[in-house]
Length: 292
Image (cartoon, rainbow, N blue to C red):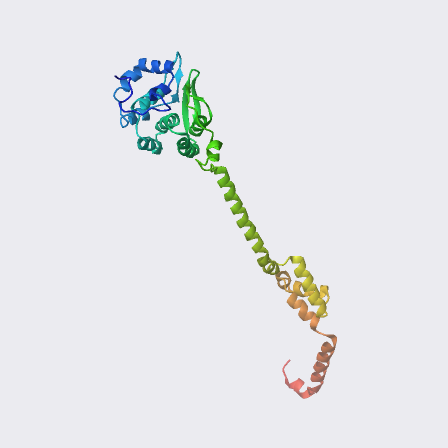
């Protein structure tokens, strides 16, 4: 009774759901201690706790000993849970081995159109998972596992049911074309490139005003030289004008030098003549009366 399919289960691909697992592996599972101790009387609800405790996926290892993952997969085929329950298994993103178990069951039991529609969005899941086989543990990823289910004929040492090619379903109009994430990313880059091109095409209208404001020093010097020539000043005079205002010259006593240079000889002669005329106008009596 413990190894029989639940009463009222539907035939999958024209046969008993448990027969999807090969006879040799199925008999090994029935004899495994994990099946007898932990998988007895499991339901769709209590199976979640066992799936969360999984540490790896895989078929058989060692001397054809089944993995715990394979035991729970056979239990799912035996109890045949409803579709809504399996979709809830997929929504539990924090439990990756529960999702892997549901993905494997969906691939084996669902129609081809439903398999593509449900499993292709899971190609975005890049989480690491452990895979156990006769060679030991290996590291793989969730998206690689889903891709193997969609492409390969044998996964986890089980021959999968035949899956109709996607292009055939597209030609028959049963499923729409696949939307690639790379195509969406490329379209996003093209939109960004077009926006940058628009911004660059708008920028030259504003650039002349900025360039006119920030003129180069050579242009400013040429303009100053041209203005000096128009005013009748040579570049040397313009340079001496700005040099005379430097603080080094004002501190070195240029003020007194400019004063001494500004006194002309005619002014000196005039001052001497005034002094002589003043001395002659003084009378001799005043000079005698004034004390020496």
